[in-house]
Structures are given as structure tokens and as C-alpha cells.
Image (cartoon, rainbow, N blue to C red; front, side, top):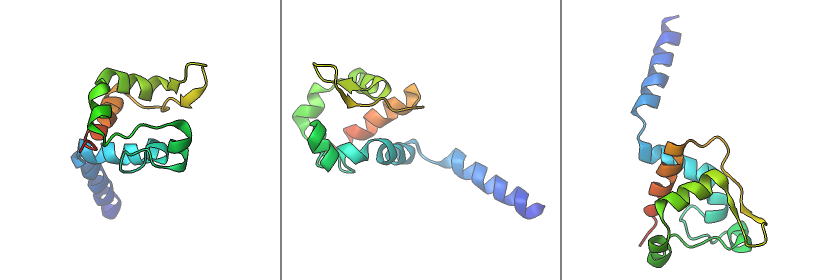
Length: 109
């Protein structure tokens, strides 16, 4: 019984002490990297197919507004013909979407 309580306490403390940056990186790698790449360059098979932007490019970063990034994460993106380019991230809170945009900003050179 004591081992179970100790383990539960360790797990709870680990969750409470995890940094938002680490959580954002993990979430990015889970939700975004398959198209945008772990480095943000969009140089993946799917990223190339869908025209993912290179978020290491300072010009691309400068043109993207945080609120537009959050909206794209929450609502997805479509091309001018209505074809889905990016599906909405399911179950992502506003805070998580903002954290993803902030993490994405770290790719800028």
C-alpha cells in the first residue's frame, strides 16, 4: 500500500513540475511534426504535399500572427477551393494552442 501511495505521489509531482515548454514540445511532436517536421521546416513527405511553411524562416514567422496560428490549430486550414490543408487539432485547449504557437516561434533562426 505504501508503494502505491509513493508511486502516485511521484506521478502527481512529476505532472505538477513539468515545464510548459516541455509539454509544448511533446504536444508539437505528437500533433504537428508529421507535417511540419520536428525542426519546423515542413520538409516532410506530408508537409511537402500540403505546402507546409518553413517556420525557421524569419519572413514566414514575421507574417504569421499568433491569433492566426491559434485559429489554424483550433479550426484547421483550407485552401481557396475549400480543400482541407490542415485538420483541426482535436481536444486542444486555447492555452495549449497558444503554447504550440509559442513553441513554433522557437524555430525562427
